[in-house]
Length: 352
Image 1 (tube, rainbow, N blue to C red):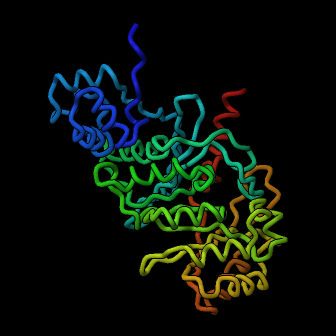
Image 2: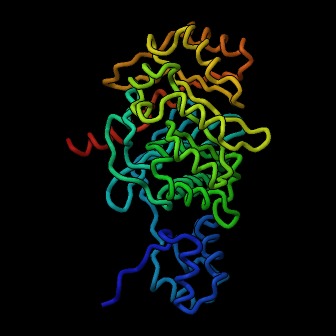
Image 3: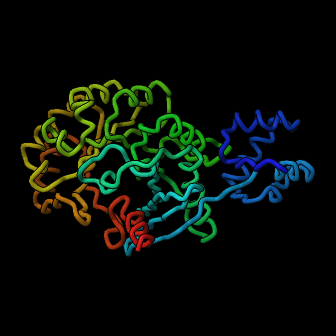
């Protein structure tokens, strides 16, 4: 009986080189194979025409080229697209493509579900299933890129690790995925166009800085007192505001880069003028900008969206204190807008 083939995407470049060595193949073939998969979108070894036919046959006997299954898509009137992907074990994840002027930003997931249990987040309400492997994280970029290429559409310009899950809770696999996404041999997206968003896992933020990953850092702050943040973000009980902001101050930033603080505005919870003034004081001395995000309600949520006047007042106070403060409206509000909502709806339909 022949042994089961290995999915080649499960191997890092170094692991693939080592495996090829045991097969008596040259190490440089690993780079060629990676380029064929991530840049030429090859789905078979037969397509890899700069590799000898006899070697392609040997590769096909040992390795498989698995592709995530696209289960469902939704397209908003504003151009936003949601993709629901099926994984090899039957679980599902979401990716969201957001067009904006000269950008095409893809928001990708790092976990199936999430352990952080933020009370304003639909994904957090559904609990945690497992971490994604690096090839499942990078695979979202690959598959959406393939879809865009087949459509003749503009390619992805920016990546945001801000979908389902907390990226820093899946630290090692996320780092591996970042290497694939930014490698010139693979997806080739500049680290300047890659943003990692975290709820504030302080030890992992420090580790990310030490790892030298050339990515932009976004911190989901969402409150200006420990009392409020404890209520809406349980992570704050482990890493309160003082510790989190100290980690932000020591995070290594390249010239002209800033930390982005994300602030979801919840009516009557964190959207007052006093909150804005406290936020201005808390962020003093940090090279940063602030993204204000009016809450996007989902079925069963306890929170409400603030009115426009409250949003503008909050923004003006920050701007008066010389902060760059942008209001980021939720995109795709006429489809399954909240993160995790398409996945939840698909799961509910499957159980009917």
